[in-house]
Amino acid sequence: MKDNKILFGTLIVLLLLLTVGLSYAYFSTSVKGNDNAKDVIVEAGTLKLTYTDGPAINAQYIKPGWSTTKEVSVKNNGTLDAYYNIIWQTLTNTITNNELVLSATCQRLNASGTVEGTCESISQAPISDMTIAKKISIESGITHKYTFTILFKETNADQNYNQGKEFNGVLGIEEYKAPDFATDSWSTIIANVKAGYGSEYAVGSTKEVNLGSTYGTHTLRVANTSTPSECSTTGFSQSACGFVLEFADIITTHNMKDTKTNVGGWPATSMRTFVNNDIYNAIPSEIKNAIIDTIVVSGHGSTSGETNFTSTDKLYLLAPKEIYTNLSSSNDTAKDLTRTLDYYTNIGVTTSNYSGAIKKNGTSAFYWWLRAASSDNNGNFYIVYIDGDWVSFNADIPNGVSPAFRLG
Image 1 (cartoon, rainbow, N blue to C red):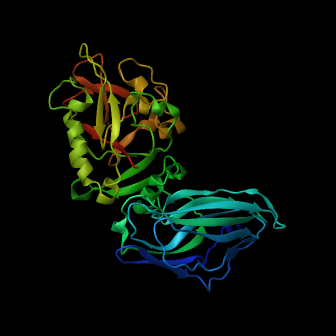
Image 2 (image 1 turned 180 degrees about the vertical axis):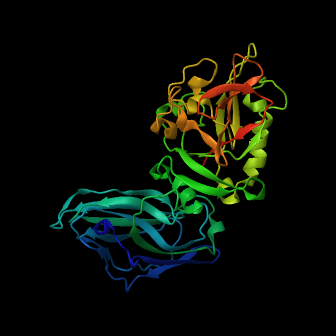
């Protein structure tokens, strides 16, 4: 509804200007600025937030160990609850080694202006990210009174490497907007995931990615955002833990191995080399640079005396258990060392209800490879069949390639 939107037309708050000019023996720093800062009123319909800035900060001869505090308030004068972010509107910080840090405590004031508890504090963190705190809830009639602390950390060691550096920033608030995988830029998506906000993206949401002239445009899907406790189990595959993206369609076709054998499992396949080189290098660099290494556990197949394999991959194929929630077949020997991705859990894919596992090569449903070696046939790996069921297939036959990866 229109009344539920908060529009922040103006961002005027704390202005800090910190410059460092040094001689041989001391840091000489000045902090000055927001003498002319004014209250900011942001309203839309029945919603109104007022941001009140405190007195200006002025200081001289700043050196490591220096700190200062600043009080600001946000009041919800509207009739509906609201959400806001605290951000740096502009930021320049060339002080290295994360030695300039920001933190804040918060008091919660009722409609009469009386303190009746605390609100969400801001833990000490280096001044680097543009977003300081996100999705802060404030009820109607409530005021959040913040005391910010800026600290130039002292390390008890030589800090001359920060001579000649500078800091300046304008602190502000903005409307909180729920992350949207389809419309957010990749830089925003990556920043949100790295900041711990990946779970705010809807599982199952999609976004197109261009893999260049060789492979063309394909669709990425948010396959997983959760990290349950089982992910911390020793020897557990991380391939369905954290923020996982999978291709929702088939990129190309490729054989799993050059010969009909599953000896050596997933780590020994030409497919693993192919997706971690050809496909990986076709991904736009902005995304590729945010892909993290994933510990991948895969079944050993039918070779006598072997144990399950563990590899470290950028891109990997899925395992049957990561798709079918009730998989109990012993033919995938690593089935108990991974979990079902949130996406397939949410849509209820099972070994008897499997249409949700269908992927298309262009406009037609097609077979696509899984990484599990068959334990009852030494020449086969598993695939997802055109109807969504899982079956064993010759390793040397080309089938669909549809890998996954994690951002972090």
